[in-house]
Every structure is written in structure tokens, then in C-alpha cells.
Length: 467
Image (tube, rainbow, N blue to C red; front, side, top):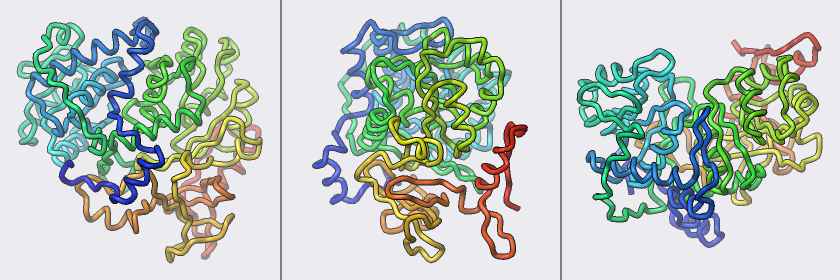
């Protein structure tokens, strides 16, 4: 096992295997099976580019060859910082193919964040675009080199600087199949690392294993109705847990659907893409959905193929869900969860009250959840408290972070910091633990105030901040 990674207790791991939650399949192998079953079907769309499953598999193998021949070894870490382009998908899968662990940085991150990830993960590689949205990542990489002693290689999608390695399609196509000695990842081992969503410090690293994440996206995909006919529009950064595998692009590729990568998030681009590509599912956030439902442009484009608009990252107000339902004639699906594990979602066939108001139910029967008060005692249904969780895809600790783990985990439960109440298995999110207004001792939910204000017909959007 990777040093600094906290595995599930042996008895829990045994139980998850016996129950069929963990299938002992490497993440790359799960996705690769689609290329065998549907070689000629389109897997990825990016603007005018169309990549079939057969072509995707070839590109992954070629990229894996290049990366392995450059000296990367199993369990070494690299910081992966690419935008929503096909090379993100091929490079991510290629790293998994050779057992190298990507740390999933976001395109807006700069020197401070990248330096932190490099040091914390002891990264030996850094994968970047040449220039994206006017910013030269190659120059930033060279600035970081003297400060990151473990960094050996910088890989560039595009034109590299001297001393950097190109991983464009042309570069990887000319690499011979010399290294292939059939590396087989251990399913219990770390596959990649996500970033925590903390607001008080630099993000912590979240180690996700092959076993837990395959279950994460496959089960999430089943509940989300993802199938071989799905055309999934990826709008948000692919490095986010939400877009990557909740259910995300991995669930779509796993069942042989088509992933469309949106180059922008503006309303015109989204509406045009939905019409042109026959999109069936969009994963979005509150600001994007707010922009779409307030835009008159949606009436100029066809959205008859669209079936589901998913909302994640923050609770979508019931008034907005109703407008999504009416304006786009789709099912609004609320997705609530953490990169650390637990995923809750409304079901597509749920009754109206749950679809419009709840944050969904956990995706797994094995998810253990409890709502606790300030003293750590469980509260009754309907009473608000902090959400704690554990299960077959919720981590047992951050990577190499003993002090943070002592605060964030208790008896195997991850303390999410989310204030919720529940009715049966369904969760109703009320905001973050620190996102409550304290007025003379009375606790008032920011989200509750927002929902009330949004009922006014002239209000397009609102944010209430506790101070």
C-alpha cells in the first residue's frame, strides 16, 4: 500500500467484497471493456473532434507508453492540470494504466496551490497545457522547478519549452510498445487523489482506490439512469469528483455512452451543444442553472433530447428546481455529496416533494449516516445536526495528514461539516456548519433565507452570508 494512505479496516473490506460492492477490478480495466464491446461508437466529442472507443483505447495505450518510457513508475505521483479537452481523459486513463497516481489539480490553480500539491504528494511529474485562456502554464512549471526537488519531468499538451516533454497526439503516436509488461494495479491501492473542498486552508489530498471509485461511479450511474444511449455534457472541470465520477464521465464511458466536452459554460454554447449533439444529461451547479433559466436564449434552441439536469456543489433552491422542470421539461436531479465519499441523490422516479426539496438519499445500502448535535450525540429525524458518514466508498483518512484526520474522522465516520436533517434515508441539506446566522442565540439557516427570497418573482438569484 502507498505510505500515508489509511485503508479500510480488514473486516469492513471483507464485508464489502462479500456483498459485491467491491469487485476487485482496476479502474482502467473497467473503462477499457467498453472499447472492446463498442469499438466504433463515439466515446468523446470536443467541438468538431469525434473519438471512437477504439481510437480512445489506442490513444490511452500510446500515452501510457510515452509516460512509462519517460521514467514514471507505479505509485509515483504526478500533478495533472488539464482543462476539459480529450487529452485530459486519455492522460488520466494512461496514468491509471501504468499505476501512476494523478493528483487532480484544477485549471485556475497557480503557484501557491501547485507548489503545495507537489510538496505534499512528493510529485515527480507535472502535466499541463501549453497556454490556456491566456495563461502560460509552461512558464509557471519552470518557476516551480527550483522549489520542488522531487519534480523530474514536465509534460505539455501542445508546444513544450526546452527540457519539457510533449504529449500531443503526434508525440505519443511515435512511441513503440516496448515497455508493456502487463502492469496490474492492486484494486485496494490508491488510483488517484482528489482535492478537498476546504475553505480555511489549502486543499487536503483525498486518496481514492480502484475498488471504492469503481463502485462509486457504477452505482451512481445506475441511480442516475446512465446507459449506452446517454449523451453526457461535461460542463464543469473534469478534475472535480462531481464531473469525473458522480456519475460523471467515467460512468458514461463505463456503459458505452458518449461524453461531450463543453469548451465554455456560457448559455449560448450550452444550448447550441445540447441541440447539436442530442445531449440527454447535463451536470451543473447553481450559478450555471440560474443563468440558463434566466436566459431567454433557451427558447431559440431545441432541447427535446434533454432528460435530466443534475445540480451539485450546493443546494438548488426548490423554486429553481421547479423552473428547470417547467422551462426545460426535464427532471431536476439533486446531487449532494463529498469528494471524500458519500453521495446522495434524488431518484428519477421520486415523488414531487423529494425531487423539489430534498438533497436525495445515499446511493448505497452500505452507507452509514448519522446526524449529530454539538456534543456528538445523534438527533431524531427532522432535527438538524452535522452529517457523519462511512461506507464502501468513503475514505478513512486524508493522505499523509494525521492532524487533519484527528479532527475530521471519528470511529471510522467522516465528519462532513454539512448541517442537515433527514426523513428516513433522505437528506435535507441546510448549509455548512459555519454557515449559520447566530441572532441572539437563535440559529438561522442562510439557505432557508435564500429560499424565501427566491420566491419573489423579480429575484433572479441571491446569496446570504453569515457574518
